[in-house]
Amino acid sequence: MATKTKYVDREVPQISLHNFEDRIDEISSQICTAAEDVGFFGIVNHGLSEEGVQSMFDVSESFFSLPDSTKATVPWSPQNVGWEKMSQVRPSTGEADTKESYQLQFGENMANTWISKEELPEFKDKSLEFMHRVQGISEQIMICLARGLGFHDDYFVKYHDVSRPDAQSTLRLLHYYETPKTNDDIVRHRAGAHVDWGFLTLLFQRAGQSGLEICPGREVVTEFGLGDEWTKIEFEPGVIVCNIGDLLMSWSDDRFKSTYHRVKAPCEEGDYFGERYSIAFFNQPVKEAVIQGPKKKYPAVMGEEFNRAAMARNFGRLQEKLRANEGEKAVEQRLKSGSAVVAAAA
Ligand SMILES: O=C(O)CCC(=O)C(=O)O
Ligand SMILES: [Fe+2]
Image: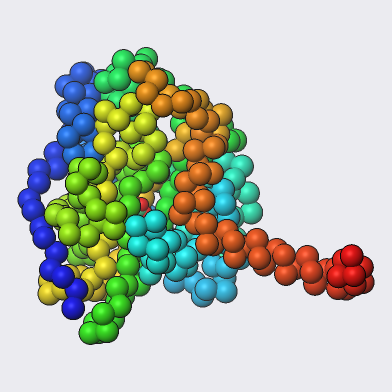
């Protein structure tokens, strides 16, 4: 039987964005303190209505309700866009998450990866509208983070400009399947313990669909995120859960913390076993961004390279499968043209 999870109460600060222009210094200091201490914080009074968020969840559900064969018309690709199912292997677990996700971007990476208007007429427009709203909130937070690090106000905003064709910020619609209540000792990961690789994540949850947990303090975390003390982050209306990703951790010379979190594999009394929908917005820099902290603790890295390395860590197995499929197709092609015989003889 799975060991009993240790839980501990930790304060995850809630920060209000109301009256942003007038309160910018106070908000900056609250955000930077939270980013240094916990790496997670809630944002309230951000201007996005609860109805607006729930209607995006309806849009998400309309996609996931399609048959797999239809969703497969917009497959995941290494630009980190598209639909995948049961294929993200977290480095901490070595096993695929039991979930499906559909990732959407603003720019050229997204070409041909929008579900067709024939299938879901309003999907693209509604998603983009939501993405732009969340981008606006992210930009306010970016200004605060830039101030805290001594950069000029629009420093991070410019590097995350979603009007550029090479924009890489991603809205990820997530759907975790219902977990069977069995005694078979198989751990069905939902989102295995991980840190986000991007800059800053904004997460939306749905009432009654628990599971998100955090475990701050990387130095005390075991490699597998086991045996640690977790804190539950429950849904609260009007609250956007924000967390710092690895990219901002290195961009701040480790001042801001990228915190371990997971969606727990339900296994104990009181866990939530039902299906879960969530929506994450990953702020990720444009491909040409040059990433280096004010103290230059780490060598400069380009935005494109940073994403490529993260893809290899998280989707390596899926990429291999895609490459193998490509290989099979190429062999078929050669067989048809007769060139395989030459290749085999060589
Ligand atoms: O679904 C969630 O609540 C969390 C998802 C997450 O952490 C991720 O996709 O990085
Ligand atoms: Fe995450």
